[in-house]
Length: 555
Ligand code: ATP
Image (cartoon, rainbow, N blue to C red; front, side):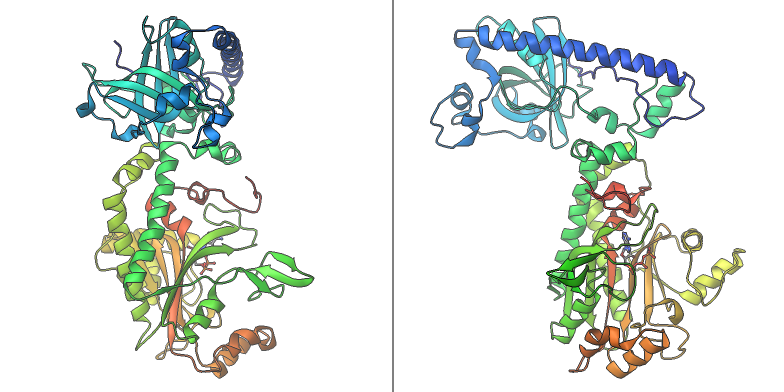
């Protein structure tokens, strides 16, 4: 019996093309249309055959397969004990990822999506079943006592991505199984469809999972494989996120949030939830999403800054939040979204803002260590489609004073304003220089010029041109902004005025510090940026499940 799960040939419909392609666009499109027509015709024929067969077949073998009617899946009490109910009754589902050679000859019940089907004549068919990133090859061959010819046809014509329950016996073939993660096969005895997918999917998972390297390699060999572009992926995100790389990305994202929370809880931080509906139509003056709040002007929070500082004034000592942050700026870049997940921290400071940087350093080294330890499979899945080098970081996080960073850039021939902000290009360059000199791709740049930071940033005691603030970088791109905040209301007013802000418009903020406030500081991190840069990805839309940007608010 064959032990190789082969995928059917890809339909060569290019979506983004390169002028260097060896086959002409026209020919490829024509071929694609032909293939697609053929595929549809075959699917229609198979579906027609199945619908007549499922009605036609009678006798005990007809109980071994079929579409499960809704009422069987609606109630645990199963008023109508149909064939699926009888078949699965008393059985436990085994996870596809847990199928191993030690289960040889055991009967198992598994659930998964139809990843591929490969009929071999009318009596034999192979189905690769996928469940949460794991795949197993199921074999169905006609047998007089259990598998009818009609059943083989039914299974052969299942639409890809449909959900099925399979009861079968685990077998161990002689050689390795190439197209499936599990190195066993399941000899199918019963198979029921519990969730049908439409016949023509807008995206094939195999196409969406393909790396650029594979596409380029095939092209050099004269074959044009489908390249699914970013917009198509996002339009059909429900399919796109089923690829192994995307499964990996969002499991890694989940871990970042979990490790962030666990670390801070263990350091005596309190998790808070601040409002995202904010009174007034501007928050700190920059672009916000305005809305009508029962007849009053309001907007969506562009940072939890005020409320996390108020919580420090409310005596929580150390707080953090994981929540949505809304930015209405028209930023059409690879790293800006209109809605992102903010990981925010605020804490009392005993002596110096370096206490905040201590937390940043230890927190992120813990996040990176644990991701490398717990997400090996996920990282591998991401790397397979989007190759990247593991992040280089040190146990002791480098803290580079801004002035030293400027000097490094100057020494490298970059023209730079010593009291201005760094642009994206300068940040990248500095990242490269830091890697060469200090061997790390994760570092803190601190003591920023006061003029480039928000009015509430505490100036440096020894030089008021600089501030007790910092940004943090991964692979030369910013992931964090943080600082000590001004907690003295009179000084805060002075600073606001110096920055040209009308104090009346921020009176709620300033008043929060009039009832006694401790010295404090904090920072804000963008979750999607952390995952993007840890995995060396080139676009933040890859690490946002349902991204919102200036041009997209669906799905
Ligand atoms: P940038 O300079 O990259 O626009 P920022 O200085 O506006 O960022 P902050 O407002 O200080 O950033 O936000 C803190 C962190 O939140 C950033 O370091 C980044 O990780 C994340 N972040 C900020 N704006 C966005 C955005 N539009 N989309 C995604 N993440 C963002």
